[in-house]
Image 1 (cartoon, rainbow, N blue to C red):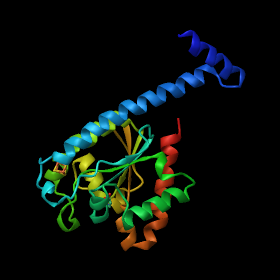
Image 2 (image 1 turned 135 degrees about the horizontal axis):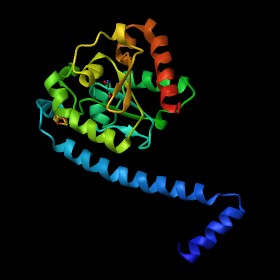
Image 3 (image 1 turned 90 degrees about the vertical axis):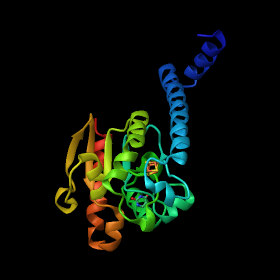
Image 4 (image 1 turned 180 degrees about the vertical axis):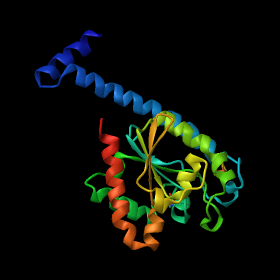
Length: 218
Ligand code: URA
Ligand code: SF4
């Protein structure tokens, strides 16, 4: 280690900062920088991607946003109109509900990473087809490798179907925890479903709380 850095660490140590803590913080910053670069590369690819017909209906592809070291990732279906315009996931009506429910648990949206199965907006916000989801899935797999969350909170039957490769009856299967490639899938409702069925809001809230607890438990 460079003498100057050692001197500074000694001063920090005397001020109460522990050397190991300092090094860990430094490593985290370097990791985040690396992760940012890798994600920017994927973002460039999706902006040009024509692997499925959804490229025709997008203003821009929406990669996702949030904490690049998140323990928990929220995964929706595909961008809607507001997301397509702003280039950010879950910022429309459903997104505002999701944000409000996350914050009602005492956590912040920025603690987590938020993305979708399909990165481009389907025409008239229709559900993406199984083929479109399959075409886009490798981008999500890349994001999972880079961010490496412990828990994936799948919002709605469509997101669950993309992972499980089978039909999912979400009212029956919500609340289940399924092991998938060394990660945990937590199935719950899509916030847009809750907008149409307000009595399900409390369940979505409880599910978000449980997914967070699962992500932060050792
Ligand atoms: N619905 C989704 O599934 N994803 C979004 O980003 C917004 C609405
Ligand atoms: Fe490519 Fe995914 Fe957009 Fe289809 S939805 S064009 S696979 S980025």
